[in-house]
Length: 153
Image 1 (spheres, rainbow, N blue to C red):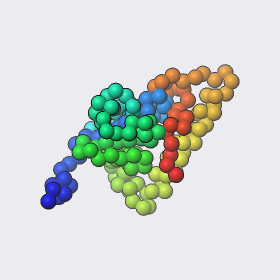
Image 2 (cartoon, helix red, strand yellow):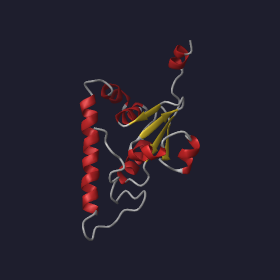
Image 3 (cartoon, rainbow, N blue to C red):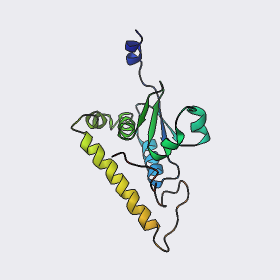
Image 4 (cartoon, rainbow, N blue to C red):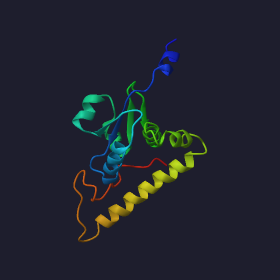
């Protein structure tokens, strides 16, 4: 009976794979780093050599389209669950993460993810306008994710 032992083992670290070429993703990475963490977050660029070294069996192309968080026991969270587990790791946001994981909180997660997608869409259109400066990888002033950070519908 190993299941009870696994449940009693605390989660000690999370690895967040983020798109380093997405200005929104980079902004959120900086925000996560500034927060007090109850569970340490290791922030690694998705698709990087480090990500491949740490998680050789992972679908790294998918991690560039959708936020992916990996627990120290091999748990894999993506999409809404990944955002919730990131909030759960933060001291000031853990209670909100618990609520967002309930059926009552699910619509708020969806609205937040759709708002982020709309932001990327608007920023991408603005950057595509004639004379608009092009973003560089990791530049928070440039266009965000384009269509690589898809929101599951």
